[in-house]
Image 1 (cartoon, rainbow, N blue to C red):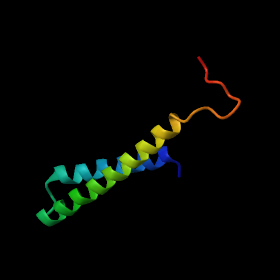
Image 2: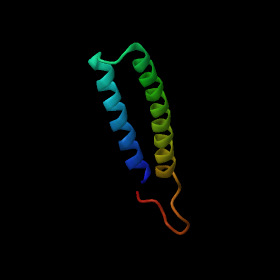
Image 3: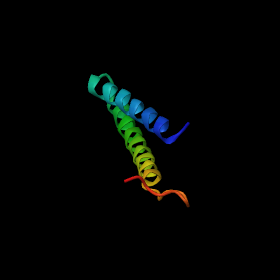
Image 4: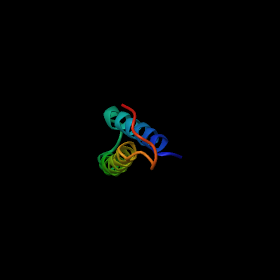
Length: 68
């Protein structure tokens, strides 16, 4: 799975978690656990975004001039 696919998966998981939290059907303990899971997912998503940014900002390979 590449970075974009992992990021899409993380976004989907965060959206599902948000729906569950908004529903009000979770117990307080389950909601607290879900919030902790969301924080971990958000950290992973930030890492994926940072990696994508570094790849896009990488200089062109030797012998290749950037397009103007």
